[in-house]
Length: 117
Figure 1 (cartoon, rainbow, N blue to C red):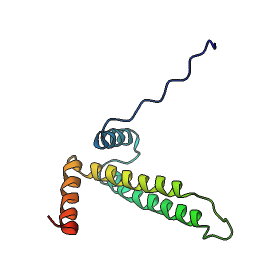
Figure 2: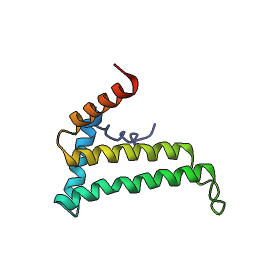
Figure 3: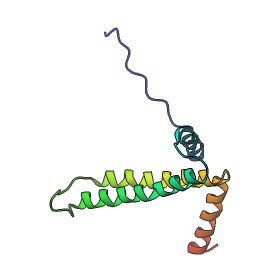
C-alpha cells in the first residue's frame, strides 16, 4: 500500500449554470485590463473570436484545408460551441445583472414563436 493518497478531485463548478456564469464573470472582471464601456464592448467582441474557433474546428474536423488535413475532431467542435454559448452568457451578464431573466424571457418568446403555445 502506498504512503501517498490519490490526488483530490478538482472542486466542482457551482451547482447551476447561472451561478457558474456569475462566478466566471466576477473572475474576469477582477482581471480585465479595460473597464466601463470599452470593457463591455471587448467582452462582446470576444464572441467573434470564439465563433472563429468553431469555424476552425469544423474545417479541421472535415479536413477542408488540404495543407493541414484533419486537425480537429467533432468533440473539438462541441467544445468550441460550448465556449461560444458560455461567452455569450457572460457577455449578457456583463451587459445586465438581470441576465438570467433576460435570457429566460427571450428563450420563452423564441419557443412560443417557433413551437406555439
